[in-house]
Image 1 (cartoon, rainbow, N blue to C red):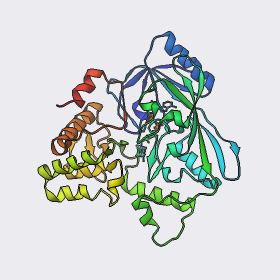
Image 2: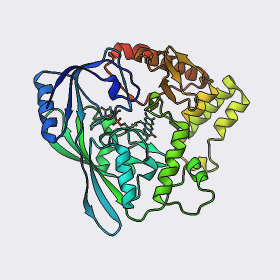
Image 3: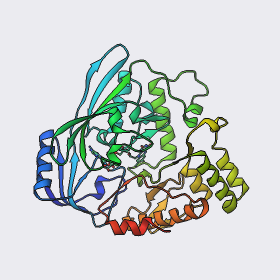
Image 4: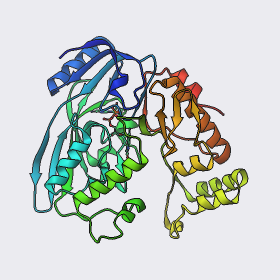
Length: 365
Ligand SMILES: Cc1cc2nc3c(=O)[nH]c(=O)nc-3n(C[C@H](O)[C@H](O)[C@H](O)COP(=O)(O)OP(=O)(O)OC[C@H]3O[C@@H](n4cnc5c(N)ncnc54)[C@H](O)[C@@H]3O)c2cc1C
């Protein structure tokens, strides 16, 4: 295990932003993880676990502690019956490789999650989701190493408390565990999940798409809408969507009508399905709110709103700083709050910032 000092992090992230880590190590096996955590404890260091770096914004000053990158490899069927396989994947596997292998084997359940950047170890953290599928639907258990003790533990599905872009790992138990392996329960005979309109429309000509066809469709849609991390730096969607109770939704509609007019309010109303009376929570697309609030061409220095998708903030010049991204975030949040009364919640992990720094950017009341 090779612990390095003042290790540059920006190239380990898809945003290509951020300063160095005071200490950095790649852990290639469980022993490496245990020894790295001992080093962290003995030296009283702060710890950050970095996967593929596709959902982080790292401070320009870097991280003043220990960055541990789990690089464990493994893709193994640990159990199967007539209907399911139980697949154990190690934290360091590239997520899209896992999807691709599962599809080649004919297993259903993660095909709509194709082409999402990052490592398998981060899958459970924010309950990764796309095109009508969520990781939590197929995660049976997560094998973890407890940061405080180095002990090995298993958390089963119900203990993970998956919700929209949340789990215990990014809420109540944040920072407590390093995920070593994730156990997925996949179906041997599945049916396509075409609940997402864009994906459904892709197949108007066909009856039942195959797994391979679904993967190709998802990749094609994603390529059109999202920046290629190799070409344009970003952390994917910067803000979460909203899930609003019917009264909150009505309040939002009224606010938008008052501030942005009837046409805008009608667009919000259209999000409500005819069965909405029975729905406890209504999903409000933050991309739509950003469109209505006209933030499309906004930028601060090298940080900009992506022209094909307003939820995505990009490193447009390849030289944007975290400071510029946060200044843009602050402007956008103020604009959205002014017109809608809603407070945008960022999705990526903020790494290496001081509390007061973040408070300054994220509070504006
Ligand atoms: C172009 C683009 C498109 C994207 N599309 C989607 C999408 O459709 N849906 C979606 O949900 N997300 C999407 N994302 C966000 C991101 O790809 C996912 O959240 C991904 O799962 C993050 O994985 P990562 O390995 O890069 O994690 P990182 O960014 O390295 O880390 C993210 C968080 O997970 C923690 N973490 C990582 N690995 C571990 C581990 N082994 N143990 C404990 N904690 C860990 C980190 O500490 C951090 O808090 C997109 C990002 C980009 C750049």
